[in-house]
View 1 (tube, helix red, strand yellow):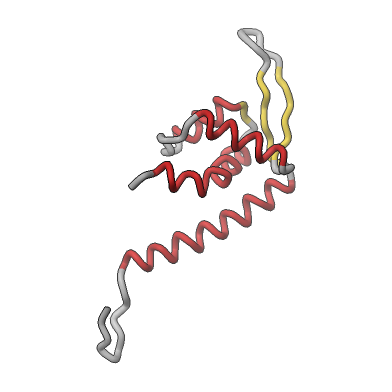
View 2: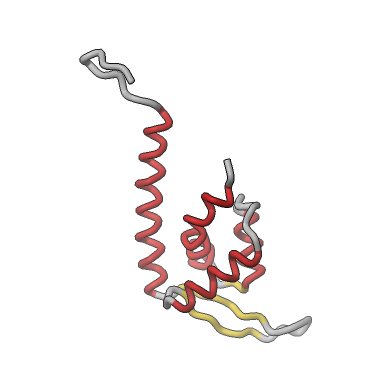
Length: 115
């Protein structure tokens, strides 16, 4: 299965979940997504998602100076982002439960109908 197509639909949810646990800068968020099992995620996709979520008010940002390189732009979740995360998590659980039911196949009917 092409995971990149699946990822397009859930990247917002995954990024919000990662940032909800702990603020992070771009590459740190990419690393945490990959460490979490989303190995196919591209840097550009995550950075684009961060910019879009920030523009929508779901994320806030702040700059932290670094002694060993350029300053890092950190992202944190806002109340709008927490609401979006809760809604999307609920939608995801409903969708995945529904798909699990479809994959399990039809339930035997008491009338003997078959699919």
